[in-house]
Image 1 (tube, rainbow, N blue to C red):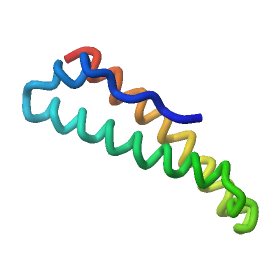
Image 2 (tube, helix red, strand yellow; image 1 turned 135 degrees about the vertical axis):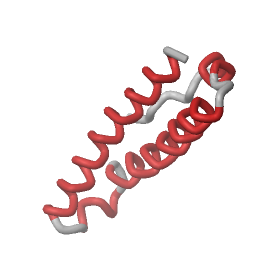
Image 3 (cartoon, helix red, strand yellow; image 1 turned 90 degrees about the horizontal axis):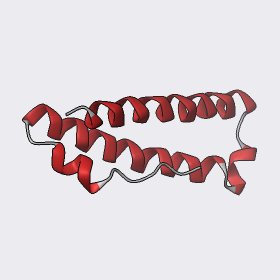
Length: 77
C-alpha cells in the first residue's frame, strides 16, 4: 500500500507559515511511509525478529493515521 501524493490543490492552499510546515511534513511522511512499506513487503523483512516485525507494522499503521490527519488539516486551510 502506497500513500497517495499530496494534491497540487492542497499544496496551493498552504500559504501561511504553519500551513507550509504541515504540507512539508505530509510530503516527508509520505516518503518515509512508502519506504517502510517497501521494506515490509520486501524479502528481507521476514528475516528480522518477529517482535521487531510487529513494531514496524504498528509504526506503518500509525503513519497512515497520522498522514490522514495532516491531509484533513490541509483540506481545511
